[in-house]
Image 1 (cartoon, rainbow, N blue to C red):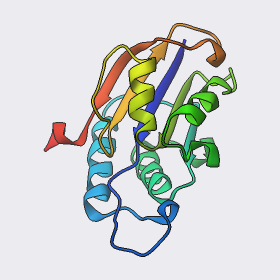
Image 2: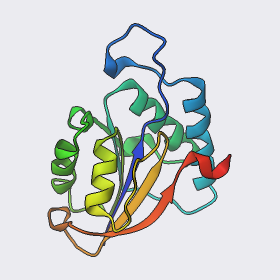
Image 3: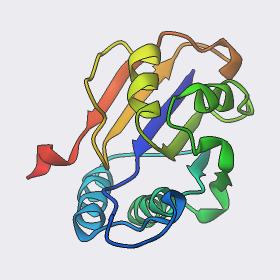
Length: 161
């Protein structure tokens, strides 16, 4: 059984004259990332591996979640392949994951994550919001075999406000 959790980066700031990958989180984003990850801290939430886009906003979101969930940073790998907005690169990345990993968390971007949620899961969403999380399970032994899975968790910041 493979379990994939997709977490969209928290709300970022447009207040700085920086290239897209360097945009920081704004205060709402920081607060929402803490809100969602703190909610998860009360439930068993394990990961064999954590991957993040190399964009500042994704890495910062990832750090907040990992700290609040007590996930050791040795499980983290940053990948430029996850700086993807269509979903094609992320989908290929997932299909090529090491089969020793049963539970994987990936931090990245929209529209890629909404698209992947809809093609890999069994529940349709219009939009994965910032700091939103979707977990999908697949009854397979290899990441290469994943196709339609079961959406087992969807958590959005607005659920706690």
